[in-house]
Length: 112
Image 1 (tube, rainbow, N blue to C red):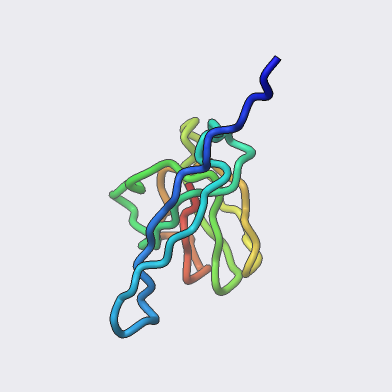
Image 2: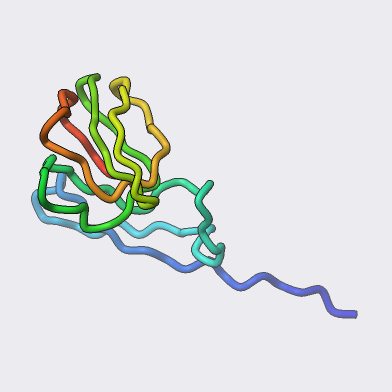
C-alpha cells in the first residue's frame, strides 16, 4: 500500500503596509482546508461605529473594545441588552447592532 501524501497547504499573499515598496509576503495557511465553526478564531475584523439605526455589515462572533465600558447590542436572536466589555478581551456575542445610545466603550471592533 502506498502512503498518502497530504496536499500542500495553500499559499497566501499579503501586502505589508509597513514596507515602503509594498512588497508581498507569502505564507502558508495550514488551516485553509478546515471548515470554520463558531468556536474558530475570527478571520475578519471590522471597526464598529455605534448606531441607533444601522446594523453591522456582518453578524459578529465577538466584540473587542479599546476602552472598557458598556455596549448596548442587539443579538442575531433579536435580544437587546447592555453588556460590560473589558478592554482587550474578545467578548463572545453574535451581535447584529451596536447601539450609540447606551454605549460608553470606545474603539469597538467586531470579529467575525
